[in-house]
Length: 114
Length: 114
DNA sequence: TATTAATATAAGTCTTGGTTTATATGAATG
DNA sequence: CATTCATATAAACCAAGACTTATATTAATA
Image (cartoon, rainbow over all chains, first blue to last red; front, side, top):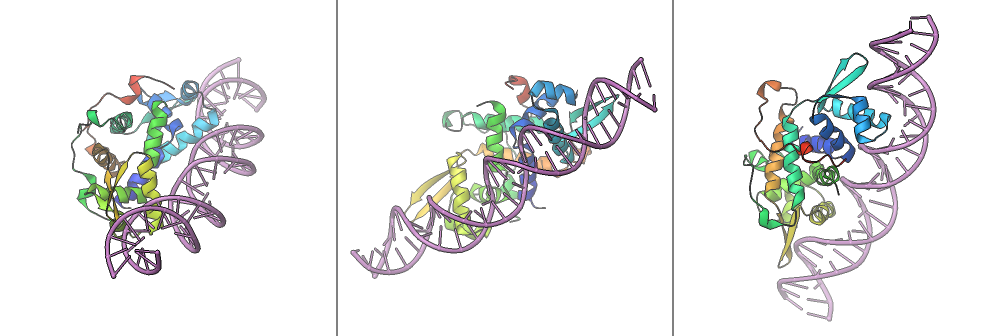
């Protein structure tokens, strides 16, 4: 699986407003399905559906505790990464406040594997 | 438009392998449509289609030069951000090498606007 | 101005995936 | 063991969007 496909996989997983709301809530701390349902206002089956997707794609991790199933974000770096993207959405036009805040080797220079 | 919707918009725009390949190539420097077609191996209409999406969503910026239309990445921070996400795709399992590399205010703490 | 090269658009097909409704599993409690 | 609460799954519907084929636009050149 090449870079573009791996990135597509992750970005598609995260590219849904409801899943983002779920991740945002879980990011504040491990919580149960019921709590997510209440917090988001989504139907219980819909939340379970999205949780399954996020679980299967290694974004979230479940843990059974009594009758509840608690979910947590697997890799905390993900939350930071989302924060960076969120900043990008703020001033798409406003070039004035454009400054490189995060320096890292540009991904497209590493190896052009198609 | 709330945070989740803005993020969804951006992530969906980027969540396509062909668009990522196009962005990766353009990221290396402003280039024409024809060059992108050759570099990616995609059909010309398909490239034009994706360029339109990326243009309309403020990711790329076109500039006419003679018979050519040159495209460039509008906000260079986007390339860094993609690099960060790419790193996240490397060791989804491998928790050993998990270390917070980018610190920024967790986006889900700023304001829980549903 | 007619032609060619470069790019854009339109229409049509087909797949992916988000959502709802209904039902199943699984653990706790009486 | 039966019932209830918490969560998961299944099926069906629907819309968004990626891709192809065909055609239109725009600029350079003869």
